[in-house]
Length: 118
Image (cartoon, rainbow, N blue to C red; front, top):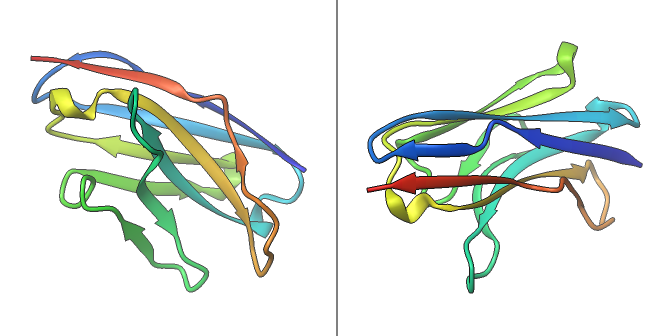
């Protein structure tokens, strides 16, 4: 089992930037493709960015052109660089670990709150 801890959330003004981090511990990090999701109150969890098995990254519509997922295997960490933040980006942000070539349910971190003020 892998364990995930997100950090980097906070309060930012509209137009600002934040970088979220997600550190993985436990099982071999290379066994997982990773992703970032978010959930706003009263809404479903939404895909922001997810690695694909071939190495590319799938971005959700809300993230395209503004958010970038990156990965540092030496630090067992993924990042989400978020630019030009908007009030509608306010949500709890989660990282998820998806075991490669498996149908096992993903593992989620505890989430980190991002609040964007207008």
